[in-house]
Length: 343
Image 1 (cartoon, rainbow, N blue to C red):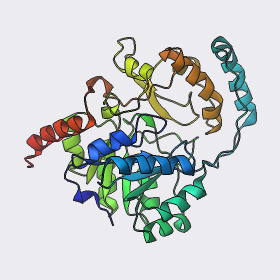
Image 2 (cartoon, rainbow, N blue to C red):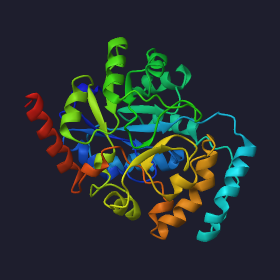
Image 3 (cartoon, rainbow, N blue to C red):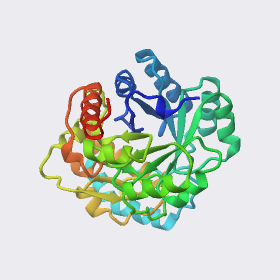
Image 4 (spheres, rainbow, N blue to C red):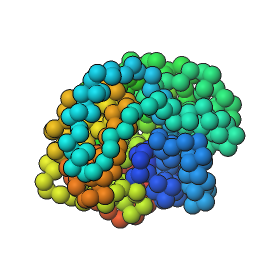
């Protein structure tokens, strides 16, 4: 079974679902000694299989898949209707119709079955902890199975049955992996959270959350087996980051990141823009809010208007640069190695 300690470079591409994490990005980092997650969030089983196949065509190195666990939180219909009404003027401006949200489990059972039949090296889950009836068949197929945790309590819940933990700090860009959309995320910074987890839980740990510069990565690796990087790769050549998102990351108009439910109903860190300011009171309903705002966000992106797009980014986004993902990984590791005295 795969272990992260076997990596030449303990660097993992984060599963940035919805575009940025591509087969090309994962393969590029895997080929220089790291690895990465193919994101299966927002995909059905067939689309996930296509992504896995495309990644295998680009690299013979091990990689993994990340899955969103279906949400079972109760939806407040009254609050959702009020949010729809608040969004309507912006939807009218972009000429889009706001859909009626519906239940969507993202083909979860079919994805699990597909992974059993065609295993990858490792799988992680985000937004909840599937029970043993889900994870044990994957492990029986030779897959290392991990859980995304955002607090010590969540790590304790995952301590039995899982093979590794992805410990995600509040500095992370994009969604926090909390187990319920309504949960207020733990605000313990990554390094203290890592220290809490590794002191109590005897599992391999991947550190995630705002890790962009070498000193922070070196500090995280003093506690973790590997680091998961997302924002650091948003401008990489192989990343599927949209044009409007790429431009916003270098735009001086955007000066800070905030955690918001405005785009999807789940807490997620993004560049502060007009959307996050106007719709800060979004109800904690996922995926309902995601479905409701999706066509509006797509239209804004197509129109090149970043103020109404979800501009996911970790806290250190100002430090990122472009170039090939492999070069980014090698350069970061050279800096980290010089700090820790590694070869």
